[in-house]
Length: 462
Image (cartoon, rainbow, N blue to C red):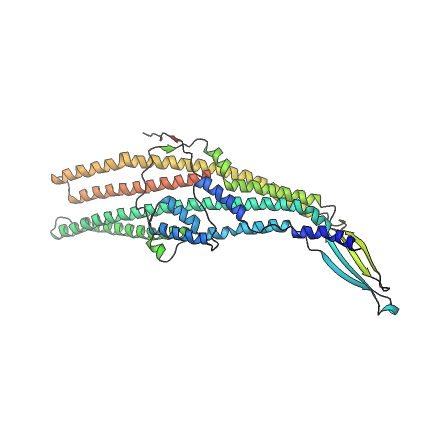
């Protein structure tokens, strides 16, 4: 009898003991490796260990210095609290995987039977049962859970790359805002000199009231433009600091490179970007993984629709005469009313929707690449036009105006207007260069990583 009980319960106990680790470290390391391959940056999960303190010290040094775009992205990837919170999605998915591999707990029950004349000496029956079908379904459940864990990992990679792109965009936006404010301050100083001169000219009768009013209106407009640019600069700093995950004194004192980088001598290779994006975009891979997850779930639901729950167990009974008897017990759910048709229909619909989502994401990716590529090319063309044609022309106009002013053929106001227009051209050039670097960052995001290293000649335009 003891041997029979042992033979019955040992497999059950072995199944219960086979618990997997709930740590998602392996999935996180795979995500970190993919991020580094596609972006060149590392991510770390802050869990208050010794390594985290070292990372914190390194971050403090980066933020204290003048950050480059790459350094700013690295700070955001290591310090952004919203990203750190997303890492817990891996913990949830890993916990689901562990749960999928666990047997349901056995059910223990007891009952007594007695006749009225034997009420003081009843039969005692102890029963333990286990869902046998649950044991058979463990491999299928784990297959679904592994696919869900992989999907969570890919979504995390996509979120990391998205944060890197948004940080670069915020960096270039802040650089552009800083340069525009500096340029508008120069314009304001020029306008201030012009309005002082206009006031003196008006006092001695060299200009009339209308000319003075025009100069005053222009001066006030320039001051308003400077004020708006200063507000934009504050907003750009706050947006950037928020992405870096810094606050307090650090959010006020951090520094970045003050000027936008010049355009590269050669444009990166733009051939076959669509196919590269399809091959490495993590959001598309996550959508594909979702279809696999649902396919596994549909298969699991179909395989169990006619069986229902199957419970097996053992009864141990103590009879009134003192004898013990042991016997097996079994029960099966009869799928008379519910053959899981509604569950299967829902899963099949979700699977079809997921398949269409994959197509939609792929279409969006190709469109995003083409749009970003067009913006890069256009921004480069505009910037080169400013640098090679518009700014030199404005400089030439100022030189000619200065010559005419020296010869007393032009008023000082006309000369000041020419200089202001030259400064405005520089401002527009700054904004165009900013747009170029933002478009280039958007192209990297659309491709899903760094741009192809092989250069090609920059497009020539006439």
